[in-house]
Image (cartoon, rainbow, N blue to C red):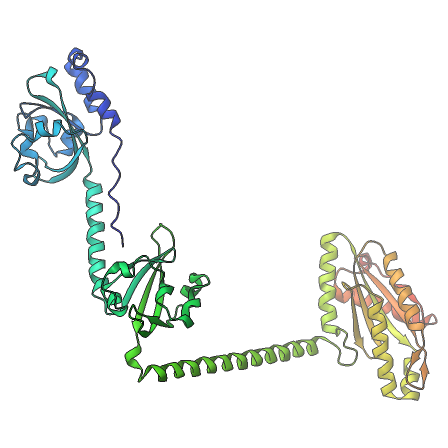
Length: 475
């Protein structure tokens, strides 16, 4: 806890340059010019002859709380100086004239109010016998602020020193202050046994790595941290510490508060065992919670998957397909591209179910789903619409011919025989194709036109494809 620095000395060169002019120049100036020049300054400037004030500039009147020069002219300047500065020196002005640097002192204004000034006296013998020019920079506000800071720090230091717990301040990892309670806790007779050391120096080996990482992460925990100190006599002290960031503007400052909890435990050995048991329980509970969270997330993922995918083929179901179609339409609108929907119905599937049974029919559906997924890109969607109906959503196509390439791959893939473990099945596909924006501007319309086109294919002989004939202009 360092005392706040005294405010810096203001640059007084402008005033000094004026009053340091050669006397013959000043004598040549008219009284009016001289007065105007001194009034242009912001500091007190007065001319004293034989110690008495003969002239005061306008800023000086304000600094000394004088309504007019008459309140000050003829008054010995030494009378304005507080007794604590002038009582023991008969002619303090003459003494100050020999000082090369300005002197801070307290001045009584015309109303008796005390002001703090930084005074510089310059001998000017050519202006008269025992003549001096006195310059005074008003530093009252700076002194008040400094006094307030010192007083606040003194109160805070007294409060901290009287605390029952260890309180220390760390700057860049080093202890810069420790209170009396901390000295007693660490069995230190002198502050320099602690100040300048790292806090880890007084930590038990098992706890030194607490400060290996970023100490700000410990601050963010907002909780007391159990540690074990080792005092200068090598006695172990169990404690709880809290860490606070101090914003001093001079590096990373942290305040450490530590409470001795050794007496709260029946014995050091029992405390150690208790801490070990607690750590074990925390680790076990952490693992249990992690397992529980993992299982819960797995269950939630499974539920979400079940809600959005077909239970037989594991393809996206109708709900997820419509959602992806909406996204594909939005993307096509934004990118000025084409989105295609293929509504597909398996030809010859019903006889397989009727003759070979539903189990074999399910095998055909699952294998058909795999073949459909292999015909499209990762960005596209193959979904089961229901029964033996499937829907393919192709996004970001440049031309309608891009969908023809895919539909030919689908027809070729589904034409291959299906091995059902002792039985071989053959199916075809009737496929209707609708495009955005040619056949609709929303998912419902496009699906309806693709479905109608699929039924047109079935009516024309099956195992083929056709584009929707209804345009959005006709809707």
